[in-house]
Image (cartoon, rainbow, N blue to C red; front, side, top):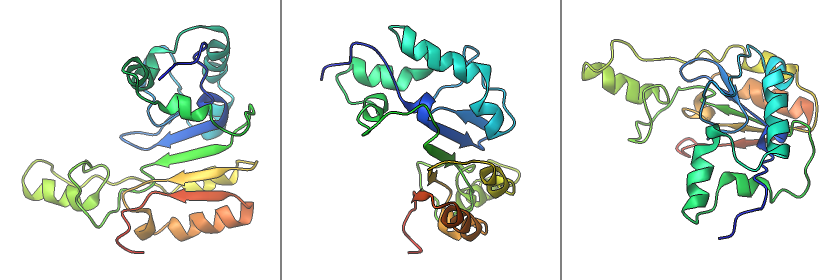
Length: 196
C-alpha cells in the first residue's frame, strides 16, 4: 500500500477525543499516545480546542514531512504496509478546520459483561471479578456527571461517538441522546449489543 507524500492527518482539525481513563484527557484521536511533546493540559473541551498545543500540532502536520511521535500506531501500520486511521481520515468527503467529531472513550464503565479485552476501568462487571480475586480493592468508577454539561457548550454539526462500558445501560445515556437530538447532531454508539 502506498503512503501519501505528506503525512497529513485530519484528526487534529476535525476531532476531539475525551478520555476519562484514568483521568480526564483530551486528544486528537483515540490512538494518540500522550507524550511531553504535545501535552494537552486542558480541563475543558474548549481549553483543548483553543490550546496553543493543538494549534502547534495542526501547524506541524501541515508544514513537516514526518508524523509526530504520538502517532506511533499509524506509523507502524503504514511501515508494515497496513492501512492506518490517518489514511482513513483523508478519505473524508471534505476537510474543514472545524470540530466535526467528539469521541467519549469510556463515557461510562458501567457494563454487564466481563470481556477479556477490557480492563476493570472499562467494565464494572470485570472490576467485580478483579475484586473477588483480590487483584483490586474496589471497583473503579468513571464520573461522567459533567459529560452533558460539557457538550452543551459545543456548537456545530457534530457526530458524537460514544464508547463504554456499555453505554446503553448508563444512567446518563438517555440524557446524552436528548442533547444530541436537541442539537441535531449524529451519534455513533459502540455497544456490546446485549441489551438491544
